[in-house]
Length: 199
Image (cartoon, rainbow, N blue to C red; front, side):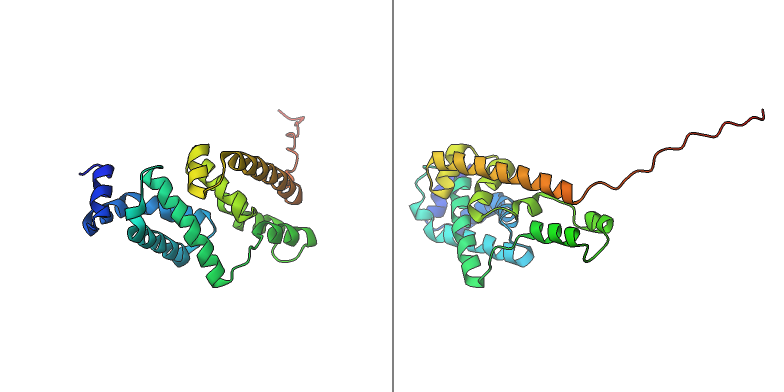
């Protein structure tokens, strides 16, 4: 199997087979990132395909200043923004919907709602703005360094640091709020066995 650098060189010369090998290497990472950014099912597939199409069309401009994976992620964020503008999607706060439903007592019983709509990673990330969600996904889920995130998003490192700080603060506050709105079910005290006077 060819090394990544050789595949990139060949792809820049129009070798579709080499680019296909790059696609196979990074398709899962790009798809997972699209899902983490709030795209579901076929929409995430579309964003992934658009990302690789844009990468193929622009690979001649890739200069190796960042890793190929980071470069792909930068393209994905641009494609994700375009997709949202095209679909007219407004940010929806799933967390607030769940929280309000539990507060006003509407809908399903609280315990069943807790079971069916557990706070998972994607739900928590969905409470953030796109800018804050992006840095959290790249740092916490993809494990990129601060410098790599700055390259992927084309922002200063200091902006990455401040957005991460703010995002983590928001998540801590909202997670605490969620726990207060959805307290754990009360556990009945364990009864002591009744002692018998008969042996």
